Length: 483
Picture 1 (cartoon, helix red, strand yellow):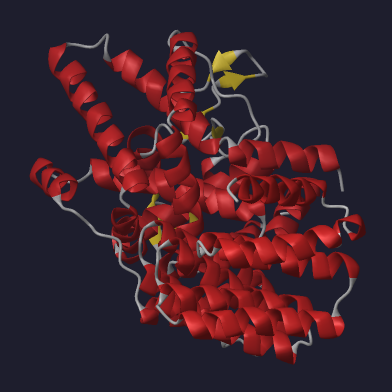
Picture 2: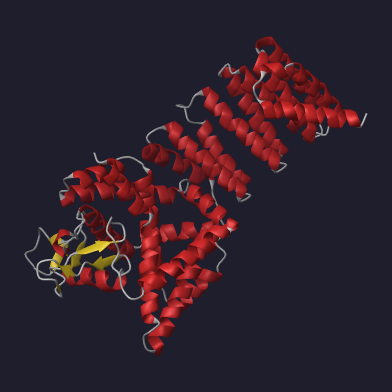
């Protein structure tokens, strides 16, 4: 398999939304030279597009709402299947695809005007496809007009080939291309300098993968891709690359779905009446994530990722994102689903629970911190991971201290040290004392901190963690300077 060809396909899919934006900019610039009313409508459409896309980034609850609309709206679903097949054919047919390669006559009728799209009972007239091509989705799909045989533009779209922004083919050039590229670059620079927006985009990309409706849609998209490739009768190197990439969850599949769904969302929003748009922009759409969502996502992700461990990795990342949005209870729903998976190792489960305890400490949720510290301790003991067990006991001690149980906290610190001395030596023992010291610093118990720092320093020659040794020396100096 040609790796260069695979990288070319991947890079084009990655850039598909930018390529769509480029064509959208060209259309906008063209319309700015049109008569007054058309120019005003173009300005308003661009403004509304911006509002819609921005709200999807900054209001993840709105994003979930849009995903549900796209999956349930019959008009969108029919359009999506036609456009998906167009995109796949265009990727395979690099020189350009023909209309008859996207639609074919219904097996139940000899009518030349009623055509069949996909493996379900969905029919689309040829003229309807041409409307998609030249009106509804004209930024996504474009005609390759140059006829190499006689150097003429082919006017008949039944003959002229087309391509899409997802295909590894150069976009057509026109008078607005250079200016449109400048607009796109300015937008890119502005986006990269907006750290809040970048953070939101990263959080939202991970949140989507724990939203049941999004993953259910992605699984359906994957199935449609494989079914349509089979229906197209795809052969050759490019088709082989797509079949390999789409037969399992891959970066190409995930980005393809994300870009395709984003583009469909814009087209859906454009069709809404002004009062509907106003209502959508004014509504709050708070982000919610229920226990039922967590229970639903677990099997969906196992199906998508192919294993409980990979699914759990995604769920933990999603849980962390929910925590960032101050949805600590929703975070716990996902973590609990992970911990209920029977296929995970005890050590991995203990690490998940310990990380949950640490997260709750950052938000002063000490009761939940104690809960997960105890779960992590039990799992680490079952896994016979003594070092991790000592860390979880330290977590428990911190939670107890913050909750006013100072005596129990000191007992837990002593227990952590005792367990470590029974089984650990050298580098790991240094690590336990170092973590006990940093925990005591957070607890603002300088006497205990000093005690564990000194013991860590005695083992400094057993570790290669230079930064930790420097910290121990520096911190001991600070404490001694006050005595």
